[in-house]
Image 1: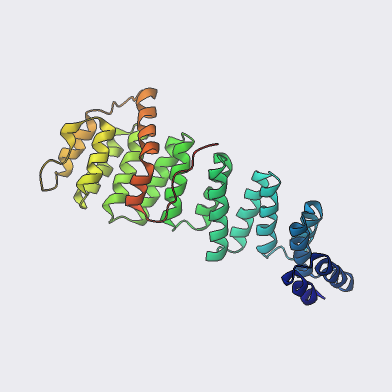
Image 2: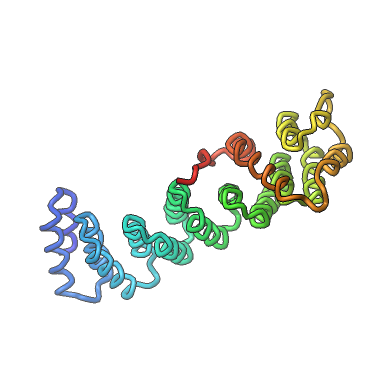
Length: 277
């Protein structure tokens, strides 16, 4: 009966598909796949209350399966129940931290950020990073969300993870330097920039940092690389040890305005920065 229901879905006859799956449930109620199939059919019919009930029954019968959690998260997004969607996605990822599930969770997180739902997107990507901490690209996305949400400490933590995962990449250290710069930590920003220079920081990226500092004299004027000490000294000059709120906000705006160019230099798969609203 379930196979007949699937066949009817393929030809677009949702009423017949539902009838077949309901008959399967009547024959064997403790059949989780049938409840999940019924949830999918009701979802496509726009009968969301029935879809939610079917998914929840499928979750009760097969709590170890990620699929009903993912499908229920899609339903919650449509109904505007975003934090519930985030919780379902987090549960799915814990149950099955596989690439297909991770890709769906990433898509939902980005969709939430495009809608300006930064808090929900941050919670989702936080959960993602706990399960798949080795994904540097997602740490970069989370750093972006924290920057939008003005969470300097969390953004800097993301930068540290990116450096940990890509320790030999000068661009990762540069990225961390910018995040430390926004946080107002002169010593950490200087150390990160010096590490980037010692690993071959491209002059164009140093220009980005010079623009943030408002110090044309810190630009890479010579064909060779500046020493780490020179860049470290340059960084210490304009950043007070007790940064003002205005300085921090100016640094954050620099990050947001130039995010796409900066992130493209660090990783290749980050979509353009969404704007709230």
